[in-house]
Length: 338
Image 1 (cartoon, one colour):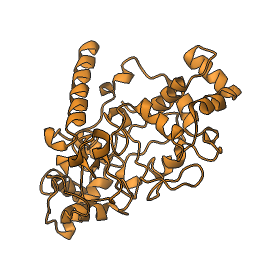
Image 2 (cartoon, rainbow, N blue to C red):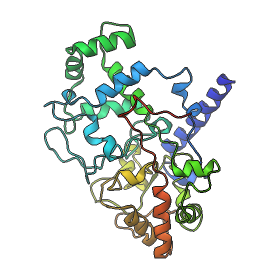
Image 3 (cartoon, helix red, strand yellow):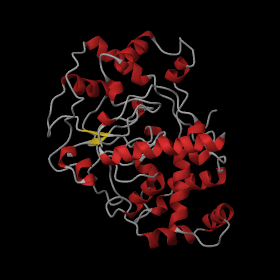
Image 4 (cartoon, one colour):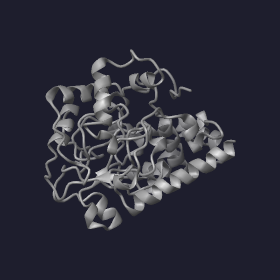
């Protein structure tokens, strides 16, 4: 049975990846029903969770020594206290260099099929490597990264236990960080409890917001499935004339200014919003969609004025707040709920 489930997941995953690569637009997908993420859907967990590998990845994730001037870590842009974002409009690199994009939250990355705002990579392991090797972010080379890790006796012991080898490699570092990030799972929010039958888990306003989300507001056209994302790319009228987003990655001008649909788990914890961090609050995000103004290029065909009243906008915000379920790293290595 496990083999069959794995094959089905592989087929579904491959189909989604191919459609994202080829088309880059949500219009090629049928809407998936909203639901709760399940651990059995994560192929990497089929043989269990290697907690030693996860704990190693956690240590690497928070280690400032792994940036060029030893000043920042992965957690500098993805802080647990800020919804695994950084609270900034756009992030800052190791030498206080201003980066061009906002740091997205990294909750529920285990279910993603593309990574980065422009979808330039397709694995969490590959994504983990990019900030280290970027001259503007952590400013490391592969050689320097391996050297910094290898000279630490605690890391020597941990890598030996996890990988059963004396040699520490670049790939092992990224594998460990990806393993940790895969355990940042949010699946027990008020919304999830409501879906399981706890009808008082969500407020009346949040329930009204859910119905708007699926209906009049049409949010579900892009924010569907268990993580409320279509894993695709859209131009929603936000951005400047220099960041072309997905269009550059796939060499398709029709996708210029299109960026990945973010998942909405714990979205209330990680303002500001959008790839450029230009929108400060969830209410302003909904107001943007309500007006559907093209500030840059041509709007995605799904983006149309919604004619929502103020009360309806407030109800949608309440629903988005009901998706809150942070992981507490202070009380355990990982928080995983069956």
